[in-house]
Length: 281
Image 1 (cartoon, rainbow, N blue to C red):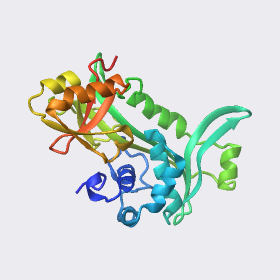
Image 2 (cartoon, rainbow, N blue to C red):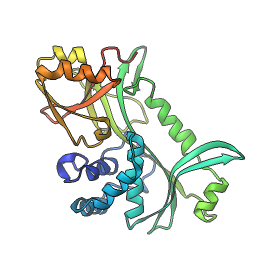
Image 3 (cartoon, one colour):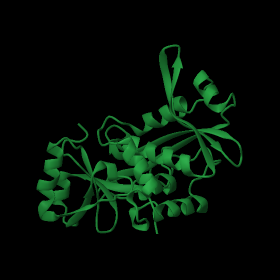
Image 4 (cartoon, rainbow, N blue to C red):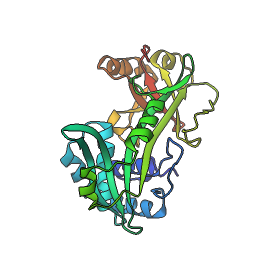
């Protein structure tokens, strides 16, 4: 059973957190000192899943409306409540005088090793696209996997010694940095499996398919889908069944409202994205 999907969990919130902790990384692991996909993490999640009241109240109290912020709040709850970690700081603004020079997602102390690490979190959903060369871009066509990866590793995760960090760590150094990039890479529907030769992409990343609305309507193999809103993209909770005769109206309305992509599952439990006919323009 896929422990990073909704089916294993009673609570949709726990399922979303499990997706962040347990699903395959999108990028090649560069630091193995922190591994959340362990029996300890699963047992902790199962404990919260029995009664998710504390997690639910925490998320409701933060009134999160964007997927990236929601993912950060889930991880904040994890670090605040897991006995093996101590949250020293999160969403830390870094300054040079009055000028903002960056932000750190999390500074954490590993209780057992006594080491302090910086963790940068990204939850991303990219689509494989070929124009002049292969590229992975986001549903909004502005976000770019390669650009995000190098910004993460060359800027966000570069060691920093600022007054803000020194105050948070009690004048202790950060021992190591951890990139945590979770999500799914989507490939064109009905194409043969595409091998990716990007050195930074984890070959075991989670895969999905995508098609535009015209391609969906012309497909003879898809007769029903289960769609969800963007805040439910992590574990695909809250799915709504859409039959073939509803495809045109359902997706057209969402696209007219400004959505660029709608995440779905088919009857084979495969993830997909339905995109506008004008994508990526």
